[in-house]
Length: 206
Image (cartoon, rainbow, N blue to C red; front, top):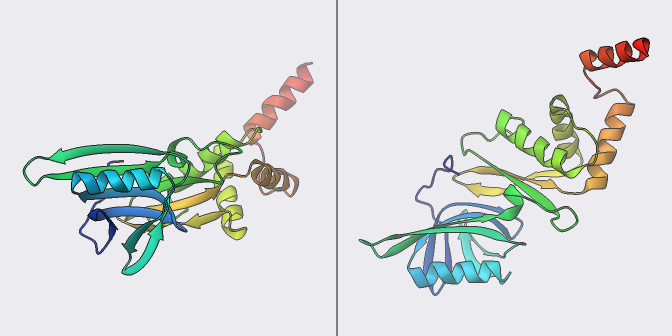
């Protein structure tokens, strides 16, 4: 996730010592992404607590709060042998491979300077999550309709972020299948004219 821009923030987690956060994304109280820096024991303690779904005390956006873990996480760590600090990235599996029937939300992480959910990357990533979820064909040109539907129905929500932007996307198969059915029925989405022409030609030949 090289597009994340870690910066010096007034953001940290208090465990066995302090772990500074140079970028983060949180949905409600659930950790989605954290760029961490601190002593090895402190970083490892944060990882263990988040993975064990135990709350940790944090300061995010200038306010004291708590953060808890979700289903599962990817964790990568490197060590600064000069400063004796560990630098680590913790990312929810629901960013990469959400599970239908298990994950309530899928997550999308975008660049900090791309705050528009209708931007190319966010639209494509959200649409791909929906495409992977439902059992019906989803065309790329339907993605903007699905974004508008999700925003209007509060099925797509912004994450609380620093150093990136992000979105939580409802991972409810029935909801998105119904959205597609409604869109096709009322003409807000449809199959490309070229596809329809090919189908008509095929019917004529048969």
